Amino acid sequence: MIKLRDYQKDIIGKGVKQCLNRKWCYLSMEVRTGKTLTALGIAAGLGGASKRVVFVTKKKAIQSVESDVKLLNDPTIKVEVINYESLHKLDLEEHVDVWVLDEAHRLGGFPKPSKTSKQLIDMIHKDSSTIFLSGTPTPESGSQVFHQMYVLGDNSPFGKGNFYKWAKENVNVTKKNVGHGFPVNDYSDCIFKIDTLNFLSYSQKEAGFKNEIRETFLTIDLKPKTLEIIKTLKKDKIFRGNSDVILADTAAKEMQKIHQLTGGTCLLDESGKAIILDESKALFIKEHFAGDKIAIFYKFKKELELLQKHLDITTDIDEFNSTDKNIALQFVAGREGIKLNKADALVFYTIDFSATTYFQARDRMTTIDRKFSDVYYIISNTGFEKQIFNAVSKKKNFTTRFYDRAEISEEDNRPVQQTGLFRS
Image (cartoon, rainbow, N blue to C red; front, side):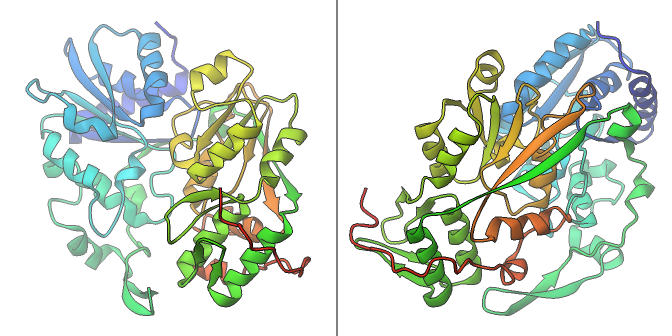
C-alpha cells in the first residue's frame, strides 16, 4: 500500500467529514498534487467493507486511475473506472456507495445542463457520496458551479431549482450579441461566492513543487499561397479554388478557417473534404526537434495526418512511455488526466481558443521532482496564433471580439497560382 503525503491525509480527513455531513466534497487540487489517490482515500475512509466506488473520468485517463487504485491497494473498496461517454453501460442494479467525478468542471455548462449532467442526476442516489475532482472548478465563469452541483439532486446545496431561478439571485445577467447581432442573455458574470461551498483546495506550491514552465515562441513562414488565401478570406469572405471553395461568410467561420490554415490544413465547403495545403509547420518541427522526445498538441484531425507524414508519432500514451516515439494528442483528448513527464518538451502545433485548454495542456509535464518544463508554440507569420495566446494566457477564451484585432501579415503580396489548388 502506498504511503500518502501528510497533506493528502489531512484532506482525506476533511473530505470524509464533509461526505458524512452533506454527502459530497469537492477536491479542487492542482495538477500532480494527488487528487486521484486522495479521492480514493476518502472513499475508503467512509466506513464499511467492500464499498462500490464508481470512478468516472476521460477514456485516456482510465489506465492512470487504475494504476493508482492498485497503488492504494485498499481492500475495503471495489473500484470501477469508466469514462463519461460509457455511463449508459453502467450496471446500477447494485448500489453505488461512492461516485468520483474526475475533471468535474466538464459538467458545468450553462444555462442548460449538459447531456452528461442529466445522466448523472438520474444515476446518483441520495444515499451515495459524491467526490468531485478538478484543478479548475470554474475556469471561465463562476456560473459553471451550478450544474456540477446539480447532479447531486436532493443533496445539491442549491436545491432542486433550475439554473434560471438560481441566476436571478446569483448572476449579474447582461446582454451579448450573437449571429447577426441578435441579443441574448449572458449569464457568465456570476456573483455567487464559491468559497462558501468549502471546496478542499491545494496548490502545487503548497505541495512543494518548484517546476517552472518556460514558454518559447518559434515563428515560421507559411507558404505565399497560404497567406494569399488568408488575405482573400479577410477581404472577400470567400476563396475560390479550381474545384472547391473556402467560405468565411461569418466572423466565427472566418476565424475557424484561418485557424485551420495557419496549421496548413482546411475543410472545404462544397465537398466537405479536409485537405493539406501547407506542410511548413510539420517540416519545421521535424528539423528543430530532431533527437528530442516531444509531445505535440494539435487541434484539427487533418493536422495529425500531416504530423504522421513527417515524424515518428504515436497517439498511445503507453507506447510513448515505453518507446522513443513522439506523441501527438488532440487538445480535448490530451489536456486532462494524462502524464507527459517522459517528454523533453511540449510542442503546441497550434493554440486552442479555450483558456481552460491552454492552462491544462501546458501543465502535462509537471512533476514534483522536475525543475523546468519547456513549452514551445509554433507561430505562423500571420500573427494569428500569438493573438490567441494573448487572450487565453489571460484566462480569456479567444472569441470574435479578440479576432477582430488580429493582424494578418502583408509580407507577401504576390498572387497565388490557383490552378489545381484543391485537388489531392
